[in-house]
Image (cartoon, rainbow, N blue to C red; front, side, top):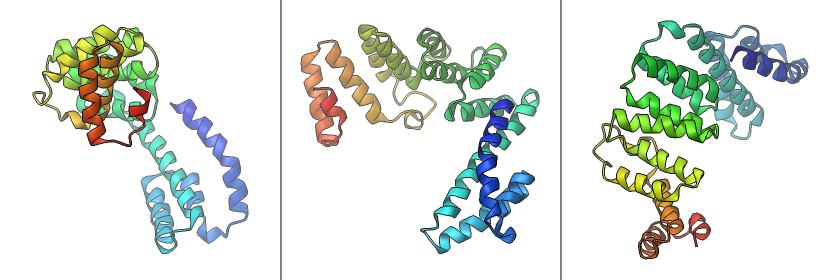
Length: 242
């Protein structure tokens, strides 16, 4: 991650140097943050550009500066977590891995999930999220292993079934994918987590539609399609599953 942060800093430093050369010193709030990254300099720059943007909604320069501020501050805070990784409480370590997962740092988050798997082998969530990281890395066999483990450690883990069904669909195991999803449906609402926080029901319903079609379950497919046409008649995914 440190290498990525250094690379990111080098990539943006030249454009900003040129930009600052044309900007009055008193307004170089980003430069202050760039020279001394901290929450204090971030807060001052954030308040300055936010005020300018609130006064002029077309101030794209302030909007751009805020965007860069967000990215750099996220990287800085992630770096703070990285240096403290060994002292983080398990739930914070898990959330840190989830942040990495959310921004596409799959190798980094998998390493953290694996550590949690070793230390807390019966904790279902790190297994499920590791499965997602492997899935998004296109490592389908590893994703399948992790997601099955998530279900073994918590049999009612609804969204683990859904993701496992997606993995099996991607692998071409359509019969298993449908059976997995339908098993998951039997646990919906029984899990300790809110399923809508992990995956939208509409996405699940379209997954179900695709699996019904590919498994040649015509009657069930027509019923599911009619249901979705009534809910989201303009959704382009309906055309994709005709």
